[in-house]
Length: 125
Image (cartoon, rainbow, N blue to C red; front, side, top):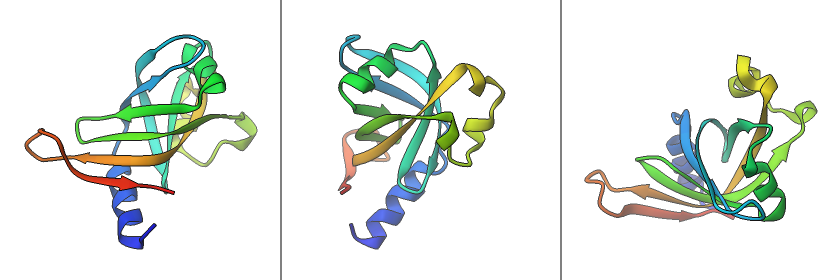
C-alpha cells in the first residue's frame, strides 16, 4: 500500500469512537452500535462477552463497520485480555464485561461530503 493511502486510512479511522458493526455467521446476521478505537490500520471494538457477534466472528470473520463518514470491510478476531493493546477502550470501566475485537481492514470506502456515494475506495493488503 502506498504511504499516502495508508496515512489516509489511519487519519480517517483515528477520530472515530463509535461504529455500527455487522457480522454474519452461525448466529445469523447481527448489527450493533459499539464503541471503538483505532491503532494504526486496525480498528478495535468492544462487544458484550455474550454477544452473538463473537460466535459469528469465530464462524466467519469477515465483517463490516460503518459510520456516516465511511464504510470499512475487514477481518475480525477476538483478542485475549492478555494481548490487549494499550487503548483507552480496553481500560474503560465496562471493559471487564466485554470482549475486545480487532478488525483488520481489507477495504475502506470514504463517503462524499454530500452523503451520496463514495469519494474514495482504498483496498488494503
